[in-house]
Structure formats: C-alpha cells, structure tokens
Image (cartoon, rainbow, N blue to C red; front, side):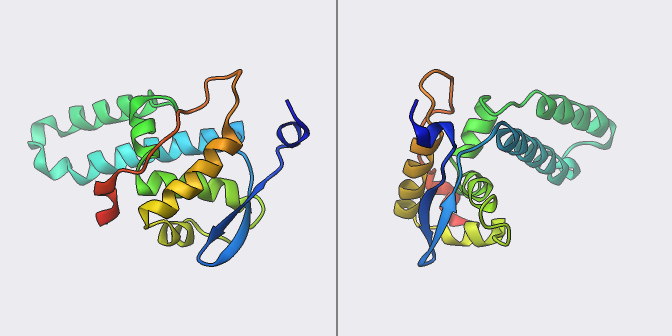
Length: 149
C-alpha cells in the first residue's frame, strides 16, 4: 500500500471544462450508494403500481420493499445501476462532493452524458477505488440505452 492509498488522496477529474478533486469511496459512500439504489428500486415499483390490480398492490409493494432491503452494493441490481449513466454520475458525485460540497448530483449528471467522458471518469474512479485485497466493485462500462434519457 502506498501513501496515496493510506491517506485516501483525491484525484483530479475534469467536468464541464473545470477541474475537481474526487476522493475515493468510503464505506459511508458505498452505504449511501446502496440506499440510493434501494430508493430507486422502490421508486420504480411505485411508478408501476397503477399497472397492478388493486387486490395485488399491497403484496407487490411488500415484495418490492423486501427486494430493495436485500440490495447491497455488490448485488446484481446495484452493479447494473452502477453501469448506468445515473449510477456513474452518482458514484462520481459521491467522490467529488467531499472536496466540493457545492456541486450537485444534477450538475455531475449533466456533465456525464458523453460515453467517452463517462469511460474516462470511470477509469479514474476504478483506479481510485481499486483495492486488490478486497472485493471492490468490478470495473464498469456505461450502458448505451441509459444515454437516451
């Protein structure tokens, strides 16, 4: 382990022509990411509740809450969302906001619409968060269908 890893030194990322310092993900950041994924799962279920017969809605919501509660940052649902544009932006925002608290998720999301820019930023984040002795999230690629939002 080197000094940069021991001290969790941030790296520079460029967004919208400006340079920002991005810190490695902490356990708290991964927890926040988990909560975000869980909330998105519930939000998706809630948006679709009208498509479910009235008599089955409570069971549908209970199932969604149970599934959401089981999501951890290494679960397939979280890894799939991590590869989306929104997931990449959220991960980037978590790293940037520590050094730049004024930066919003919406700003980061707006900056990460180009697939090449996403790959560039994710490569830096993957390097920053890589811990060979642990099971860090696998390297991710953005999903093209997410770019249409």
